[in-house]
Length: 208
Image (cartoon, rainbow, N blue to C red):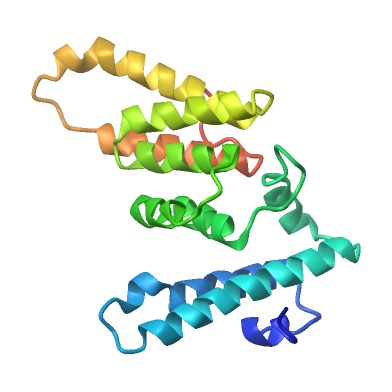
């Protein structure tokens, strides 16, 4: 256990959850191992990265156990991690969510590959990331696995339905490619943004 996790995240003990989350994300990006490949400081950066993850986990667990009141600005964020067990996700999974929200699907997949525990949420995030890079077969398989593991989760079911709809739409239009502009990537980006928006309780594209 870290003696002063707030010091590690460079925030005050009185900081709001939003401030803590912001500091955690900034420091995670700063010390991420992928940024120090072939760098003599790589081991030090990796240690610091792990310390940041541990500090964030410790603070959030202490606040949860101590009855710390989440502000309205953070409640929906944490609710999105309470499916299939009612417990907050790990710092690594929070970072995966950050990457997905930034449409940095490759980094999200790299980090997912290093997480040994394959929960329904893991398969859900993997499905979103694979869809983001156009790996639709893997995306569909992982979305289906997420639903199989947690059939009562509306997020997972909605994602699987959207992937099925996309697949059918692609099959119906693949022979009508013509010479028009390629809007596949734009559609995929909008779809992924809508999926993550719904994960947060919103709805970017109401028709999906």
